[in-house]
Length: 413
Image 1 (cartoon, one colour):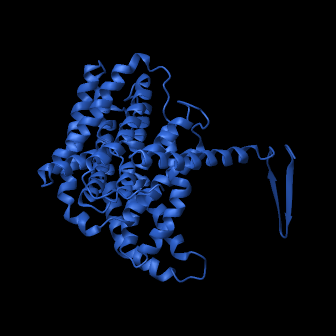
Image 2 (cartoon, rainbow, N blue to C red; image 1 turned 90 degrees about the horizontal axis):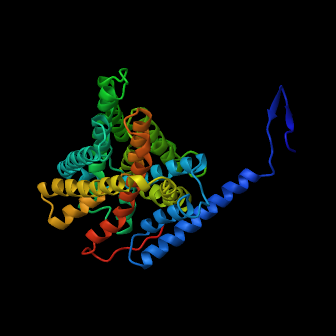
Image 3 (cartoon, rainbow, N blue to C red; image 1 turned 120 degrees about the vertical axis):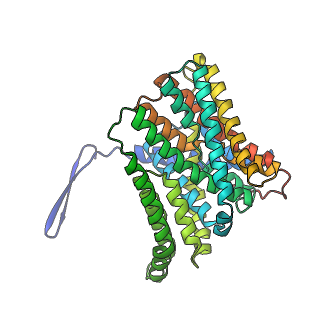
């Protein structure tokens, strides 16, 4: 009943619980939202594959169609945000499970070179483009830094669809994204301490936290994860192994966030750690249905929900210029790094294309810059659209770069 206070009597205690019941209106809204998300992403993904594009492109466009930019059937909400966070964490966890650790070690030089190339050129291009548009020096530096970010989650899904995640190119992109994330976070901390009016930011503490994270993750992945998985996998509960795997995935992601590193890096590390145990295949087979039936579709849709075209008329030149710089500089910078470390021209361009997407990492940086007055409020929407554009162009570019590879495996997860 509406507005009713309900009391439950239990032995030794009385629990009073007040709530307002609204005939399940909120529940119905949640159910309908998830119905739309799941149905739209699956149908759009299938349509994209039928016209020769990766299914992830269709899923991203489904978010734009359902969101405020077109039909306005779904709006950004706490539910969408939380589900999408879980989705991208599970996506990177799966990527870690499928990563060849030996190949990742062999390609560390290439990954580092790709990351550096994908930071230097975007920073120069972003700073120069913002200066050309008349922005202040501090704002221009921030936009340059924002364009340095890379979010590899979209590339991971695209490479997985094309059966290229295990390739040397795919492994290099994954390694480069980790290096890129760490460097950009450090640069952001330095910039905010110098220009953001946050004098209490301790750069030494920032570096210490990053070091603690990687040391702790390395030790946990080498010793704790295999030991705990082996000891507790036989406990008498349903899905003990899968439950432990998800605990490590979410725990590593949480620890990464606490240490100032993106949660997806922690989830990726958890996946690599479990991949070194005898439980790799069991976890991989069981986590994919959890991820791809619900959480990953919400993640793809959530990206499109950020698009709105309100008030863009006066900023169209800024939007187009920064978007072109964002795409070209990251593509070329990553490709140069790959070429300098022994990759051929096509492989280098494929690796560069895999680094273009800015995704949720750049959105987080943009929000941080807005709060610290490093990004002018009137440009925030344009920057969000630039991030979305880089995310949308990544799947077809990767498909184009890998078109000379063996026949693609069509996956519409």
